[in-house]
Image 1 (cartoon, rainbow, N blue to C red):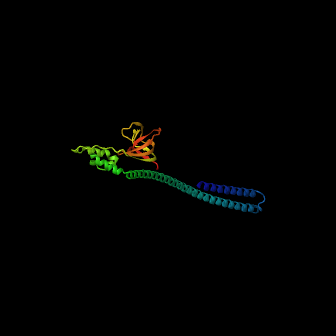
Image 2 (cartoon, helix red, strand yellow):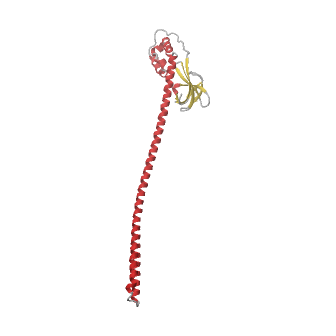
Length: 264
C-alpha cells in the first residue's frame, strides 16, 4: 500500500512540474515578442486552464488514494475470512474423524454384546435342556453308586470344567475301607442342534472322529481358525461340539477350546 501512495505522489509531482515549466516557457515567449500589451490577456486563459488541470489531477489522485485504501481494507478482510474458513474446515474435519471413531466404537460394542448374549443364551438353553431331560437326577444317582463322586459332591457332575481339580483332591483323600460297589456307566446322551461359527482358542486343537477322549484324531486346528458348528452334545460328563472344518471334514472337539461366534 505504501508503494501505491508513492506512485500517486510522484504522478502529481511530475504533472505539476510539467505544467509549471510549460507556463514559464510560454510566458517567456510572449515576453520576448512585440505584443507586450497583450501579454496578460494571452496568458490569462492558459493560467486558468493550468489551475483547473492541476485541480483535476489532484482530485483524481485523491480518488485513487481512496480506492487504494478501500482495496487494501477489502484484501485484509478477505485474508481474515480465508483464515476463518480454513479454521472451520479443520474443525469440521476433526468432528468428522471423531464421529467415525464413535461409530466404529459403537459397532464394536454392539458386536461384542451380541456375541456375549448369543453365548449366554446358548449356555442357558443347554442348562434348561439338561435340567428338563433329568441330567440332575442322573448325576445324583451316579453319585450314590460311586463313592468317589460322593466324596466330590454333586457339583462334579454339573461342572465338567472343574472335573480335573475335584478328581485330584478326591484321589488325595484316604481310601474307604469297605470295597466300592461296581460302577454302572450311564450311556445317556443329550444333544442340541446349532448353526453357528466358531474359532479355535488353542493351537493344534485335535478334531476327533467321535465325541470321546480316546477316539481317533482326524484333523487338527490352528488357533483362530474358523469352523462351522452344527451340534452340541453332552455325554459322560463332557460337552462336545460337532464341527465341519474348512477342508470339509466333520468331527468333534472339546467345548472348552472353541469359541462360538455369530447369532443363533
